[in-house]
Structures are given as C-alpha cells and as structure tokens.
Length: 59
Image (cartoon, rainbow, N blue to C red):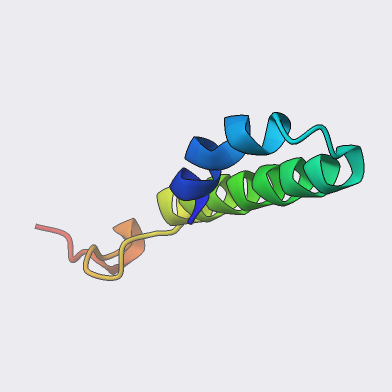
C-alpha cells in the first residue's frame, strides 16, 4: 500500500488541491512511520528460537 502511495504521490501533487494533498502526504508519512516502527520492534525483539544467555547450560 505504501509503495502504491509513493508511486501515486506525483500525480496527487499535480492536482493542486492543497487540503487533499496535505491529507495524502500526512497519511503517507504516517504509514512510513508505522512501517519503520514495526521494523525497529522486529529488529529489537529477541528471537523465540534462540535461548537467552542465562538459559544456556554451562559446558
């Protein structure tokens, strides 16, 4: 969805309808921010398959 919005943004900006364009840009930036936050959470979350250091038995 975000990729489609990025592709269509030049067309929206050419409409010269300022309130509609501002709404489009706000939704686009919000969608990008949500995707970046989801990627950050996914990156920072521990893997479920990997045991923590405290759970590993000493050899």
